[in-house]
Length: 334
Ligand code: ADP
Ligand code: NA
Image (cartoon, rainbow, N blue to C red; front, side, top):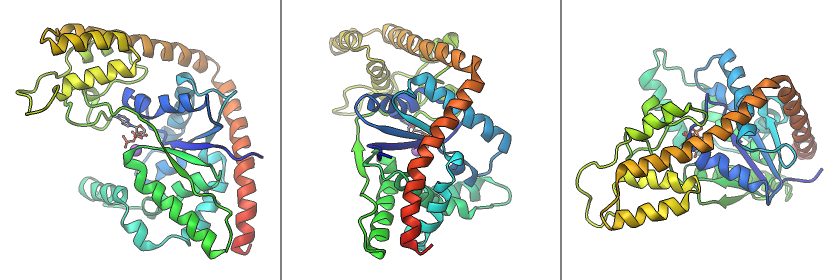
């Protein structure tokens, strides 16, 4: 089995928003044109925080359908569900002994999430799974011995840890078995909240802050219409307010560059009407999401077919991971 060029994973949260799409999924769709890609829906990561099993099952299946609706193409890429590839866990356990307690303690995501649990949950239960999560992430990557991993700024620390775990394994067992996964830096836009454009668009802030990728037209238009534009005087040297800049970012992410150029000329001439900018943004988003909604409806109508297809793709992914594990087990002394 050939090793893939690119490996990337996403957690099964409920409903993607346009930030996830422009910041991650659109890039996945692009990469399949030029690279041999393996993509994963990592449901086993989702159990490290408090969760509901039925909800997880539903979210995992929906995430698969959403990714297919966005254009992940089974003819070009392999899309697997992590829990259908048990090699991830076996590799995680073996690699956990090639990673130090200190390294894991320094991971900022663990610090943030455990602090949040301490603050917000009644019993302050912080699972060991949450602590060891970066090792499972390293296993996700190393199981496929993929050449590169697309990364955004927030994931650099985790990729660096995956690299050093692979390196340590190689040194410990005197091998070059694990290639060093390279960071594939891609220019993906960061989409800001519509209601509070100085913070990143995310689901956790509440429904008025994000636009769902499969949201209804009327709701999209309403959110864009009420998006915050001016937040007072521009700081010295600042070209646009965060809100206006964000609307332009979204417009260009929708590939409406001609319209964006025209509106930017208006902006420079001090003649931009925000209602026009918002109209253009809403139109572009409605068109894009309309396409996704239509494809998702087709997929939902054949949900059993989709399940069978993802099982098949997961089995294909498993062949690669199983081959890796055969090597790993030998080195490790099993
Ligand atoms: P998080 O929001 O904690 O970064 P998610 O699971 O919501 O993580 O995000 C999945 C992917 O979408 C990640 O690659 C993340 O970088 C990207 N993403 C999330 N929010 C945005 C945003 N507002 N703009 C651009 N990309 C985003
Ligand atoms: Na993230």
